[in-house]
Length: 209
Image (cartoon, rainbow, N blue to C red; front, side, top):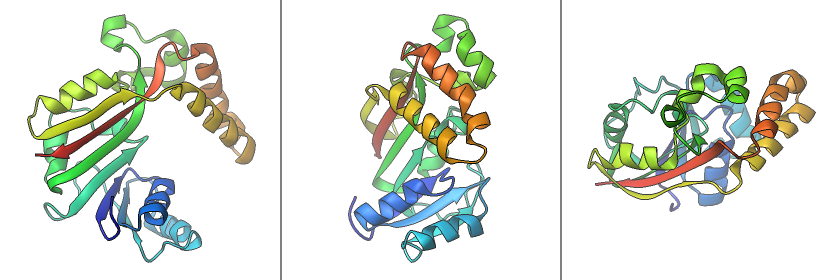
């Protein structure tokens, strides 16, 4: 990324990724999320000193309020699993990315497809239920994107020891947020039981043809 590029942070939540991108790369970020109020996100950006670089927008991922080819890059961290698995979604999203623009996603993943296992492992099902059906392998994502011939996939891999980083994050949330223990303990138990057997994060990067 280069300073001045316009980047869409899709499913931005409370804005940690947006703050990072603005600070580290000097890009202009549109932070789009359905569940976090723009006023709440804007306060975070102002406190972080990037309020002039990051615009908070409330948006549903299937009805994005942007002009075509208006972004140089689109990123989505820990959100794409909620809206991006349908066969038609990548072609839709690419309407907003300029030719040659980059797309990067980090999303919860499985080391083997649930369809291959023929069951959601019980320690995962007890915590997230059907949601695990959207946690795919890195190779699933590679095929899903490459088959469209709309992008060139430059990387599709599982993050090394991702379950350990995920566990550290869940433990930090349990320790430092008032409601953290009740919200994070099931995830901590799930990751501890899994030990990296099935759970990971997929990192996918591509550019638009």
